[in-house]
Length: 286
Ligand SMILES: NC(=O)c1ccc[n+]([C@@H]2O[C@H](COP(=O)([O-])OP(=O)(O)OC[C@H]3O[C@@H](n4cnc5c(N)ncnc54)[C@H](OP(=O)(O)O)[C@@H]3O)[C@@H](O)[C@H]2O)c1
Image 1 (cartoon, rainbow, N blue to C red):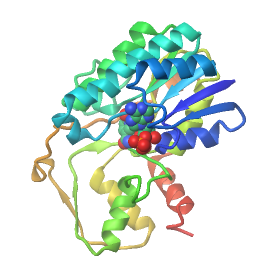
Image 2 (image 1 turned 90 degrees about the vertical axis):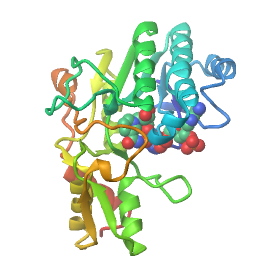
Image 3 (image 1 turned 60 degrees about the vertical axis):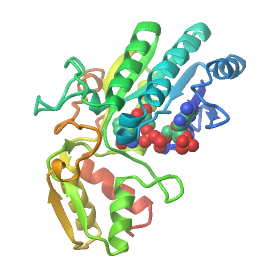
Image 4 (image 1 turned 90 degrees about the horizontal axis):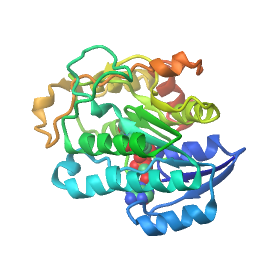
């Protein structure tokens, strides 16, 4: 299969590139391939004629999105509409990623695909609008919501994911104050890439929740990282209100991979196992 990967050097994009190496992969990199440049994007895709277009690009700096709603909507909604139209014209399957933040967190038990979304911030509203464009315009699509991604390409130059950030702050001797009232499922982008690869070989199109198994707060996630590293840093669990972040976030955004189970996709590993494997791959653990 000819598979175009948009954002191919991002966390998820680079893991997809590795996972799909036996396919004919067409990696597309920002800024040469910028999804907000609709005409150019469409021309390039028409030239490449992929069977599948995978979009991992997003404007996902959640607090910045509050200050830049226009940019959020251009990348996360309008550009997704344009991609959906191009994919449809080419007869290609569209694979698009969305977020756990489409939910408001009031449910307090894992969200299934049928639960009604209720986003709390600009980022989440723009991602949900992107979802609606995919669902309204695509004939064949996989719309995948995920949560708390961390991938191996994270670096000081590209920006650090949560795992690398807490390790780096600890190495600098900084005290760590981490929210202990937001529940998520940390998800390894390597594993998400594997499941995505399985899913796109089926014809079970539609909306999916795909995350590692289990749940924790960001503070518990950090504690597990240091426990695996056999370290005892200065770690304090705090209330979300301590940081007065610009964007409101759900206090509970754990997703249930219900549809994936229903179609027989192999289960994700528990989040603790996934983070342990990440620490080993990144050379933190031997
Ligand atoms: N990260 C999370 O915790 C999380 C949680 C839930 C859902 N998601 C969703 O998962 C998906 C993948 O996230 P990720 O963590 O892999 O993101 P990422 O590491 O930031 O990768 C995104 C990639 O898209 C590129 N890109 C940015 N703007 C672009 C544009 N206008 N046109 C084309 N490419 C562009 C980026 O290039 P540059 O690096 O050069 O900017 C990067 O290569 C996103 O849809 C995100 O909303 C992420």
